[in-house]
Image (cartoon, rainbow, N blue to C red; front, side, top):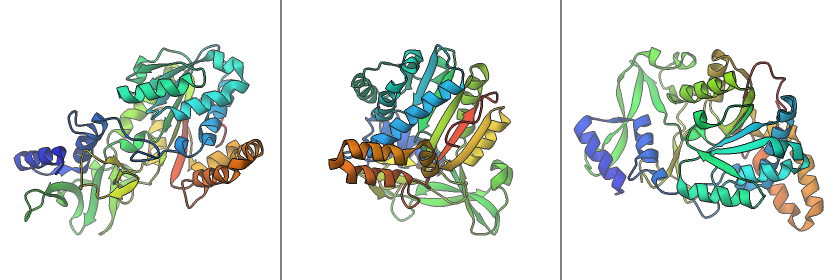
Length: 357
């Protein structure tokens, strides 16, 4: 039994079952025993791999996208380039290396990384030092200096805790986590009482027996933060993540690149759930932003020219051509990450349409 599971069992006995959102929040953010209380393990030797670990082309194309959007904004003399949850810093480092083709962009861009984990901050500084760049670390978007802004969020919102629901003969009921009746040292999924459908976002309220739904209560807060920033400062936010339409349950746990039962080892496995990016787009429009997408990651990267970039890399490094091709397929193919991951761009309304959409 993990220390966090022991703590959660005691909490459930005292206060009753946990919502899935409460369980996720504890599993990830408990200050003593949560997954993020230790340095998250990213990469081949860790618990999970993100797109920048798969191929340098991902970050390079994002970098060129940033250059294009800076030019579309009128080439401002100062640009706040902000990444949330940069992991080991590979995306921003690959992006910065690609941006060397526009020295004026690099002269204008001031990199801010939103990261609270000290170990990851060190890794990010090292990655950027390797490409001759420097970044400031801050804990919140509101701490970033004012000015034209480009925001990057890659696999950041999938850690938002979700509430899950099942529709039965009595209507919608919330999925919860309780103590197993015949084993006081284990926890299991269960159902709470019927809830008012108005608790769910409007697009999820209709349902039939057997339907499942989920949403992240914290998503609206993040969209509001972005909207406030882009209302005061022209710019865009590029969001790429696991995507869903809110129907079904997508909570999963990963440890050492293997899926494990979400309740098996709380605090020692990464917990994620897909992001309803179409809902995020609707929230953004309601907050006064323009929204492009969501579209599949494969469609987005193909529009940015990943095929041409792969060909260029293969000519320069023929010994790595097979690996480059595998990376491109994994990022773009519908059977890999190309459809499961989606891209969404939120913008100040006065800007032209973003590249790739």
